Image (cartoon, rainbow, N blue to C red; front, top):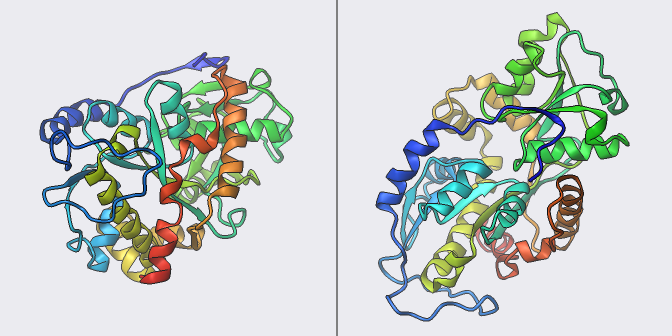
Length: 355
């Protein structure tokens, strides 16, 4: 991907390099018997999971939801949980053959495909009333005046290629009628407190911040003039994705179908049990305060798991087209990123059993 016109700071998390060898050491190649024929991409998904099948899953929040709901021990196969999150870490774990399925937003599947890693999305979740419940807001540094998107012209903006925050920056610029040449993109990892700290230190003027960082940023630096601005765009996609090769294993394909159904029920359970979710996940697992947990529950809103991905694929195609134009990568068909055999699995799980 061509480097944006910016100051570039590239960092690779040390923790990932320490983690992958451990994961790879315990990774297993299959669940299917040796020599079993590969599952064709248009073949129906198997519904029976053979004994001895294992999935390595990088989906930490779902793990906690399954523990709290009492469903974590009900799988017909073995799950090995990996503490892997975000597109870059998940794709590296895929390449190391150390992960079967990861939980990400809409960008990693695109970026993985462009970098020669064939993947498929097997589950999709969104937010009802997404404009009222955005995932990110634009953090504005103290002393910087940005009251409308047009005010972004000439500003230093934090940018993380290959992640949802980076794509959001490009979408916001397009909405404002601006291009990368109208701003200075500063490449920074979007993990942890990097963006809020970069804003507070005036390393950047603007950065997309999400989750509890929105609340904490204005609480901590608001008296110095720090503000946030809503961008008015949908930023709510949440997906499970896998390597295409994983779906060729009939045993793992069947296990993934079962996992997607449990993932959907876990999402609904967390929404319908906010007190238990705040205490069990945000407080005990993430180390946040109960007040922070309540804030995150309030801003997240109700999950939407459609049985038809058509509209989502149209929106995803718009993202692909924008990124291809801005980065010089070849166009892709968004529909090719999805395995439509899984399209109704999550919705059917809620319809048939609910939480």
